[in-house]
Amino acid sequence: MSNESTVETTFDKAERLGVVGSPSSTNGFLIDILGSASNKGLVGSLCVFKYDQDSLNHYALGQITEVQMQNIWLQDPTMKGLVRQRGRVDPITERQDTHNAKMMVSAVFSTDTSHNVEQSMLRTVPPTGTPIKQIEEDFLNIMLDEFSEELFYLGNAYGTNIPLPMWLKHFGKGPDGAGEAYHIGVFGKTGSGKSVVAKMLLSGYARHKDMSILVLDPQGEFSKEIREGGILNKILSSLNRSVEVVSIQNLVLSGNGYNLFKEVLIASGFLKERMNIVADDNQERAATTIVNILQKRSSNKHLLKPIKIEKAHERKSFDLLRLELLEEKQLVKIYSGKDGQEKVRSALELDEDAIYESWRKIANLFSDRNNNKSKKIETLVSEITSNNEGKIVIVDLSETSAPLDILWTENIRFLVIRELLKELTMQAETEYKSNRLLNTLVIADEAHRLAPKEKPENDFLSEVRTTFIDSVRTTRKYGLGWMFVSQSLYSLHREILNQMRISFFGFGLGWGIELLALKELIGGASEMIKLYQQFRDPQSSLHKKEYPFMAVGPVSPLSFAGTPLFFISSDYLYEFPKLNFESSNKE
Image (cartoon, rainbow, N blue to C red):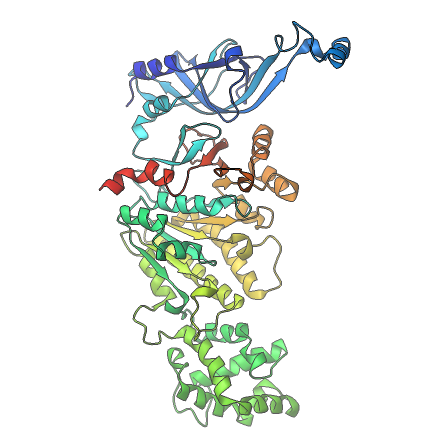
């Protein structure tokens, strides 16, 4: 615990920026800025004032969101006329200027009779003239000394060189745990730094050894950094956390077996392109017929026993299936008319090798193909959820990781994601019934594409969207949290946004429909919105790029009530590892 005299001594040494002005309330303070501080860059600065509440010393912390200048003499029409003619009116111009700032309190600490620092609440307004001082790093270190092992830094407080303390609690019970999962959002336009912040958060949560992390990586960005030995890989290695990158060639579909195979057949376009079956209902019948033949549910002329789904890729399996499909009793199940039957027959007899090649690429999704690194989806999820030690897995769903002998399309990707989500939710529920929290975070990159606001025309994407929505509603109590990384707020489904507990907003959401969505999400904090709109486009920087963010939610000891905090993310290559993992690297 911190000693009061140390806190007070550090506070007394801090630079005074101004005093509490009028009007002020518990919802926000007006600061009368001192002349000596009027030329300082104050927007974003962390400030603190000391006041008495219930006979205890209290320290209220917050950020300056806006600075205003006013000269009441120059607001007179006569004076305006003089300024118009002369440019200035001495001794009124400049000398009679007054500067005010707006400050919103985000955290309050008290020192009790035992000189211990405790969290508190702002339940009164100190008198005008109460000094407001600029927070120094030493003050924060002393004030938060009790939580020093939990603290994590994504960057510096906006417009300052002071690291903004944050904490990322795991989703389990016990020390450093939240006791439930959080759903997290990281938003910003392309080039805003959102992907980097997502990687920083991943590494932050990875500090909890018993926490598992699963990354759904549709663009291959996370996977690439691990494979190429990037910063993320180095940080996780320093934490002694192994990472498994599962590519498409190592992922085996199984789930509900033949039923899923039937869906893949339809989604793949095989029935239309190779069997000349166009109408949806006929494709449904054809897929059902094929699955029934494989399972030998009806008397077959050529198949003597069922074909296991994992053996369907073999040429002999395909040849038997093809011969059976050419039988009239099977064709009639697809088309009742002779013309339709002949179209299918002609297609099957046209080029056996070409048809088999297409079939093999589909069936290979369900086979390990003698690859000892292959894993079924339920096996992969089980390793993540049932392991007492946390596991980090990145599933590379990008086209670049797809081997030539596997069919990989948007529809197949959607089916794979859906199966992963369903298996995760099911196993999380099972663990919860056994009185165990899953303590797992799932990171979904490009989330606006997977859970769009409007119902998509693509049925497979629609199923993924529905599964996401159902999951965020139910899995929090299971200890299964979700992080959605998205370029857009407006395009992401509203229910997912409503379930967000922690959000990070990068540049690019301050105008148009994105601004409307942002206002709805964080409420009526107009001053915070104004400050967010001042964010500079990182891509417009002349020299070093800066990536500003607004954080909302219980992500920092300086924001008890989820008051928005503003920061500039650290340099990912050098500053971030040094700030958070220097001791680990030394080890």
